[in-house]
Image (cartoon, rainbow, N blue to C red; front, side):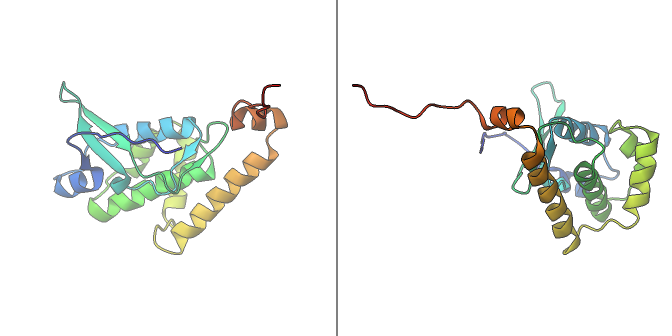
Length: 173
């Protein structure tokens, strides 16, 4: 499905980070990631360039996820899974390229999966890479997991995910 709409007066998060003296509060980005993952969506390229920032009429910042070309959808939430972890680690690595991060663990706590998961992600962050071929390998794993999930979910769930069954057209007699 493709959905489009204009979001007036936006700026890529990447550009906003480059112009900032310090990294803006990370909580909204990690809440956004948690919402996306709770809906069963893995972005596949969750970088600051894939989030745009706008302001509502009251001046409050709003974040919008864009460009889900590498995204995968699952039938249930994926928080705490490898595809979700790849999204979080990609975001941290990409932010490190444009602005210093002083407390990754605090940022990851804002995601809300608990201290044990934060420790796991912090150990993974040391070796996590977002350059080729690593990002392609991560996407391949995410795609494979999504395909496997679609193949192995119960038939009733597959049927409801496919939408209502439309009977074939029969011409009037």
